[in-house]
Structures are given as C-alpha cells and as structure tokens.
Length: 69
Image 1 (cartoon, helix red, strand yellow):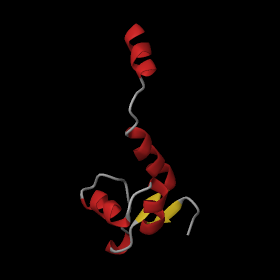
Image 2 (cartoon, helix red, strand yellow):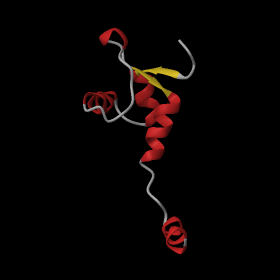
Image 3 (cartoon, one colour):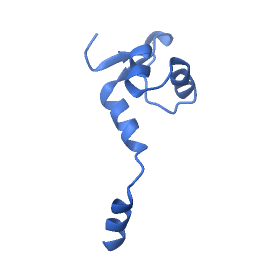
Image 4 (cartoon, one colour):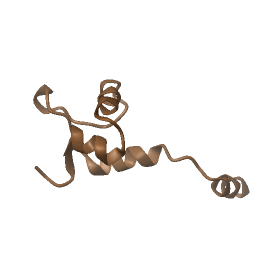
C-alpha cells in the first residue's frame, strides 16, 4: 500500500478521532474516502489534510485583515 493511503484505523489516528467517529463521518459522507470493492475504507493523507484545513477557524487578525481589504 502506498505511504499516502491510510486504512480506517490509521486515518482515525491521523485525524485524532476514534474509529467509531470516523465511521460516522464516512457514513454521512462528511470526509473524503474510498471504498474499493465495497468493504475496505481507504483515505488519502492529502485529502485528510485538506479536510482538516477546511475546518480552520480564522483568528481575529485574519478577520481584521480581511476587513481592511
């Protein structure tokens, strides 16, 4: 398996969630994943990184900088 592809248990650890929480996210299609042959869940690290970054909360400085533009 490629280094940038993770199985469910590895992905859960990578994003700091429980395996059960990860299963909930996948069942709700809230996290990018692959399901080849319908059973094994696979995740790309780069997609998990993007998913994490999408949830970033802007700082006060970010908001103030955007308001000045």
